[in-house]
Length: 292
Image 1 (spheres, rainbow, N blue to C red):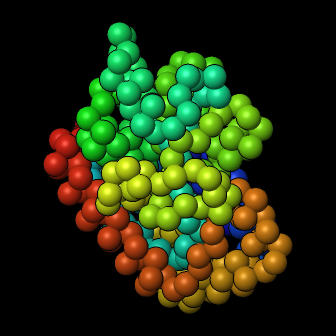
Image 2 (image 1 turned 60 degrees about the vertical axis):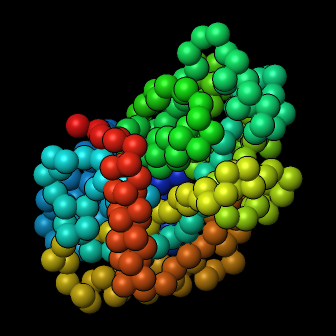
Image 3 (image 1 turned 180 degrees about the vertical axis):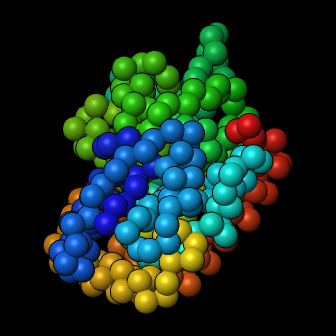
């Protein structure tokens, strides 16, 4: 079996996909090969799987960007984000975090907004690509805070994180898993998280909603198969995903990267995707956000 990761090595989809692939593959008696196909915010990897033979041997570790946001901002996709795939199982959900480098002279969100507004030069923010959850989360923040940040897309979360740390850009609202070690080691500081409530891993970090009521974005990672994949294959893989997520080992390893185990049925995963597509489409239309 091959699981395509539509992003570079080292980001959330990659690390979480590899973790689940090992456990699920052993349970299925299969060797699951991870194939990274980054580019265009997940479009390149997604298109390859949408066109793959629906025999269960090729699937994709999708995320909120590749299978939620892209439907809202690309008008010329050669596949349908919803209809070209069958959701198999949701791995986990995670907060996004507004992070800055450690030596930036701000200590909270209010000071950061003032810092941006008082800057005499244009300030940039990073994302893992056009259409990523980092991109749309930052655009929502820009709108609510009324700050003039310029988007700089990178090829995945890993180089985007490094761009913040090296002072190429001033901030990023990225998935918490790739950021947590940087924050814990003191290389970066978290000013806010994007979930409705504070997260256990960063209990002293406020939510963006505490300053901007209603702000909420959640990252997720899960497995999808090409449309037409037989029910028995979907059900078999879904069962092993849920078994893996119930194990103490996987729960501990997901906790270590601040991703909450999810699981559930393919139908529940499909409902989440439909809701994301609807929500992001509305935001993209309101803010005139397009990727093509």
